Image (tube, rainbow, N blue to C red; front, side, top):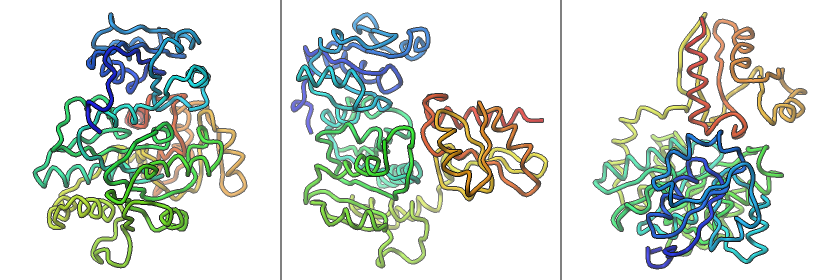
Length: 387
């Protein structure tokens, strides 16, 4: 995709949602010579901090406290923040008015001048994305690591050059609103049930993930984990398919994240010795099985990035707490709490010397936190305050 292929100059672009991606979108629209407007469901007082990130607030129309049909219909494009569902009322209004709707990833892709390596999966996305970006950098190439891992893709896209490579961690939330998105290398690490609060069933979750490969062709590469669902899907893909843990994978590397990163590096023409050097020096990623502290013989682990853990007791909070209790109460002890501080306190009471207390959510927590990083930081603050 080139800058000339998608032009929003003189166009009115309505962004649904005033979170981090929404602000970055509005800023990009203004920079491109378009008119940005933001429609936010929350009251203005609750998003003032986010709105302070607007580069040109005087050039951005804003409505808060709910969406209005007239505001949405006065648009050339409607762009969704990742937290906005495709069946939200503003989306229905836009489609009824024949206004094109897309997500932040799609918008940024249409402006991107360079190849994209996109990584998805139920677990391991951040670690694998970080490794791939480090390998590309070690090979002496320009690289931009963004997406679900931290800063929005659209925040960086206007500063990229054709010689760069984007490494994009991408979630089902972001993929479900793509249209023409076409990564040069698409990686699907693994699949298991997740995001019970967003997708109506497992099939919808799977289908959202599968959109990663929807527009790939024979010039692109799909790298997959070895699971029955992914192998079955592979037979329908037009791209060149690789399984990162197949028999030709190096026998001395058993970490699936490393194997996936190695396969991506090979697809990009980067020598194995560069990847191996990065693996040897890699220290891990914050919020992924991150040790916080030990107290009274109990280790506290921040696993806010949703890595799998073996569980002996569940303490659940948030919008899906009752659903989680109903789902798991027959197989494990489940305790319901009203907040994260209450949950940590309950875990401390239940834990015995030699146990681990692990923050390991089963879904997003937008009802309580901005994102997984915010969730992880709050957990660490609570744990460090324990006496």
